[in-house]
Every structure is written in C-alpha cells, then in structure tokens.
Image 1 (cartoon, rainbow, N blue to C red):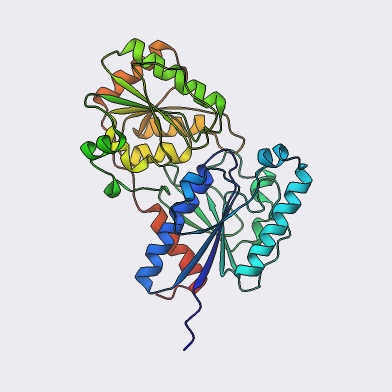
Image 2 (image 1 turned 60 degrees about the vertical axis):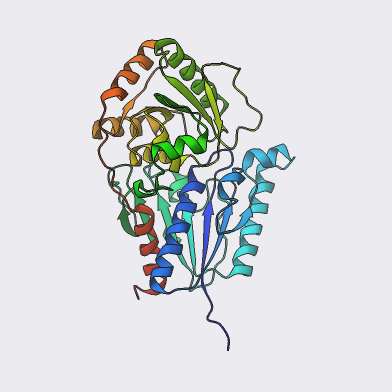
Length: 361
C-alpha cells in the first residue's frame, strides 16, 4: 500500500549576516509541525536560506538548503548578477525536485535582490508572504512579485500592522521562537548558562554580523560596570560573530550561545538592539529592556523602540552615555512588563494550512 504524499512546505528566508528572517521562518516551521499533527496531516518541510547562522537551524527538523548571501558571494569572487542567477537556478531546482504545495517567503516577495523573480511553480502551488512592520511598504523590494502571492501573514510588531496590500491578509500576534510557557525558570536558566546569583543584566550584541552593533554592546557593558558595579553585565555574542572577541574585562561575563530565547528568565534586565526577534522575545519573557536602534534598510528599529516604550514593553535607548545607561538600569529595577499576546507562530501556521487545504480540518 502506497503511503499518502505528505503536504510539502518550502520556507524561504534571506538573511546573510543577520538572523531575523531565518528565526521567524523556523518559528513558523515549528508551528506548522504542531498544527499538522493536530490535524493529522503528514508534513515535509524544506528551508532555503542565505543565513550563515548555521547553529540556529542545525537542530531544527528541517531539510536545509543553504544559498549564498551577497557578502558571502562577493567574498567567493562572484558578481552580484552571478549570485542572483545561481540562487534563482538553485531555488528552481529545489522547487522542481521537492514539489512544494506551499511556498512561504519572509518579507520580500521576489527576494531582497530579485532572486525569486521568474522562479516557476506548479499552478497548484500556493504562495504566502510573512511580514513584520517595514518602514516603507511601497518600496520595490517589498512590492515586486506581490501579485503572485495568495496570502500575506502580517505579524504584530508589537501591535497589529496597518497596511493595505493587494492580496488577502491574515493578522497574527508577534511571531517569536518562544512563548512564555516555554521559558526555563530563573534558577534553571542560570544553571544552564553557568551564571552566578545576583542581579544580572543582559547586553545583547545581536546576531553577530554587525561589527558596529557588537562594539556598541561592548561600550554598554563597560558603562554598566562603571555606573552600577553591584550588577553583573552579561555580554551575549551571536552565532555570526566568528572573528570578534571583546577585550577581556573581569567584571563582564561573555556568552556565546546560538539560542538564548528560552533562557531569558536568567536576567533582571537587558540592553539589546531593537530588532524584531530580540525585542519581542524579551517582551515575551517580561524582561525589562532598553532597546537601541541599528540602521537597517527595511527595518525602522528606532520606530520599534518607540512603539515598545509607548506600550510599556521596553525603554528606548538613544545614546550609550553613562547617564543614559544609569537611567535605564534604574527603570529596570522597578519596571513591570505587561504580557505580550502569544500564539503568533501557531496562528500563522493554521492560516498557512488553511490556505493549502481550503480550510479542511
């Protein structure tokens, strides 16, 4: 007897030397696995990504296809045009060989550099776009190819997005890799991270691909030592920081861990970039955070920090001066972070399965 063909999902996340898109894609992949199990649907999942954060995806129950990001391709001697052609051809081969019923793409309908433009699919294949808040929804990289999609999943950031698109949309809560119910308790988190007792302040350096952001984190950690010597700053270095090491500082702990989200209860406060994943993960864990903006072409982090401050989830940090760091630490000591709406990844997954199955449960 021939087994039924599993429902096939191809997730596409372009990142290169960052981790935001691929973390969201893996969160949705986990949500799809849970939703498919609830519905009794066999599922096969492939992730095609340009992210070099291999430690983040290596343990996921996904078949991984790694594609060259622009910086990696230039490093290898390829022109931008050659890289785009290589990625387009590779994705076409994945689609031909895998035969997806659904293609879920993060943020850029045709890829940030047009890598998906012209990629052919079966006429029965459904396409869905996953999107967080963007500074300009009319930018070419965000609109090119949008008409080929059947659905846009709009993830809260942290509130629902207000945007008009020419395709069907489904609003969901913020999509994160963890929910509050999945967090390790404080004692367990500190034991797993090898951290001491006392007040610990996380200083997150981001995914590790941004040297300026990592230096900013080092400056903040040193400021914490100066203005609040009773605290222990913990400098967390992301998986892409392969060739960067902060100068030794006996009062600063350094962590190198690919997935910190489930262990955030270890900390009494945090300084972090206002990237989508980090900001929402800290809010899910209800860790008082001071968020600083890093320049990104398709992510207004200053606006996100302001939204989080207005909603009571965080405080916006606009300078790394000792006074600003001291004020943020004083706020962390008394802040009470409200609960952030849960279930974004699961609701996105349900919407995606509805798209493919016609809503059959």
